[in-house]
Image (cartoon, rainbow, N blue to C red; front, side):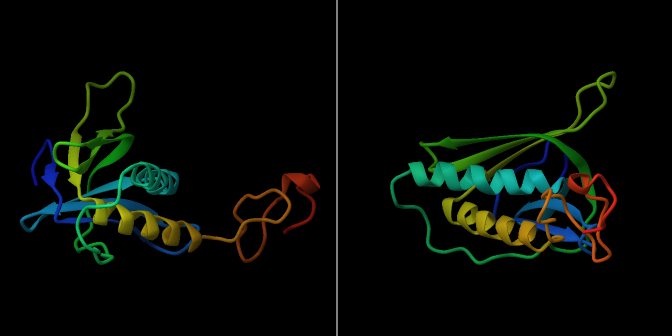
Length: 164
């Protein structure tokens, strides 16, 4: 899929590559066999899943049947790094529309953009997958809530003295 990466998605998912604590997150969409992967942050995947849930809860029941969860398709090579995400609903199409802007430095010209049109069933499956991806990360410290490795971390609640 060449720029500007517009797609009426027949494939739409999020995934992560690597071990917890060192995972790289991706959004991936495809249409007609062409696939594009975009690198993003875990928080962006989580927020997008929450946004989908919020919009879907405001809509009357309807849409397509259940979509199946989808893994990232190989090869996973990022076309660009996600900067901003904007999500809306197109009532005429009964589709959710995701606008994605590339992260660029302030002194650089405008980056790439993507416009992905997603069915309701795909959005529901994405929201569940996003929750699962985020939950599969490192456990949170019970004191400060920050991610903790197996060997602990320098917890600010203990002034960094006791590993948790």
